[in-house]
Length: 248
Ligand SMILES: Nc1ncnc2c1ncn2[C@@H]1O[C@H](COP(=O)(O)OP(=O)(O)O)[C@@H](O)[C@H]1O
Ligand SMILES: [Mg+2]
Image (cartoon, rainbow, N blue to C red):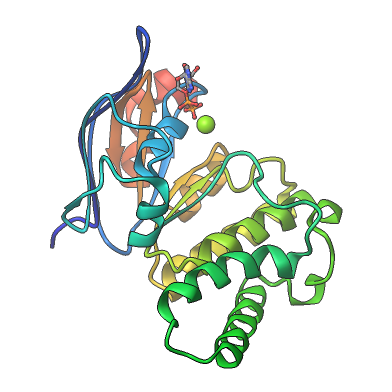
């Protein structure tokens, strides 16, 4: 089967620094892959490249066979690649409901031009409520986002990404700043998206307990390159990974 996402010699340099250095990876549809590696390894830059936020210095990115290397972020989102950022990215003064409703509205405007205004607004509201149910925040729909816990904010962001109906979701440290309970909730949620909704997931995560429990595959980055790529037990046994990253 053709990979859903493919990078070919993907490279991003900042001056002399090779933040991402000739990375060639294939991602299979339906898989949950984690990318790990020390700070500065190039993980976020790789996500920025895939989502179009940063333009590649060299190399190619293909999504479902199409070359998306030069597309703008909104075009990439439209193709079905969603992302949540390492840094929280919500409208803090708006409620949970409003934050999720914005992208639902944007999405529906594209697909339901032929419906009456009445009907399409009803659609938008139903879809917004459905997503709030999915992220488990129906009860908190009227709370402004700046009053939410960090974990709940990450869930709202995931809701925003889901509103755009991604088939591939890039999650950059979704459990960052969370306590153990919130982390477990997030892990359950991410696994559900993958297993029940068949969303292909690429996860950047620093919590090794999460990474090793959730992943079908783990990719290890170091200094812009990939130093290991395999199933969790293979990565755990990899001497280079232990040396470069896992410690001892
Ligand atoms: N916009 C930028 N300008 C200059 N250097 C950058 C920029 N973004 C990232 N870098 C550098 O690229 C390297 C990889 O960064 P990053 O992708 O954020 O790593 P990670 O997410 O793995 O911690 C780091 O050395 C970082 O300082
Ligand atoms: Mg990062």
